[in-house]
Image 1 (cartoon, rainbow, N blue to C red):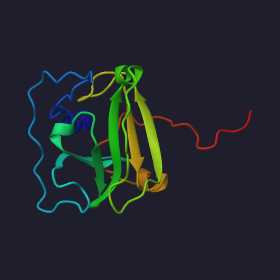
Image 2 (image 1 turned 30 degrees about the vertical axis):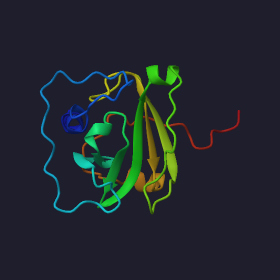
Image 3 (image 1 turned 90 degrees about the vertical axis):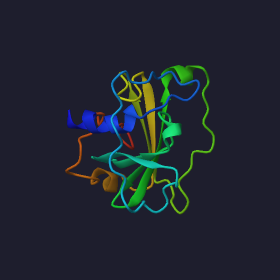
Length: 165
């Protein structure tokens, strides 16, 4: 429940871009959390803090006009840790493409998590995929914000090297 309330900061401020099938929330829109005095280095100047620290992800930052699709940026201990986009199943079925997914300047992508959200979640309430391009190792990712808001979407991921059968 704590996650849903906090994630609402990220998602309830969403504005649907043309062509994305997510519907705006009918709930009253909560205000953004207080913006920090110092911006994390490397986060685009037009990005706003959207959520407090979420376990295994960190804070979420984005330009409000780019929501819900993104890019959305994760920050942990003042440093960017991922870039994220969210794409609805209906857009993928229409042949959606997103060119030039890349790390922020000065960072490199270590790994990509591609998660299916069959029920959606606040801010993107339709079936969709979340793509997180992490700049840190999976071990570093697992240690992000251990006392933060739990991420209910965390579920077993495919083994990196499935056993031969």
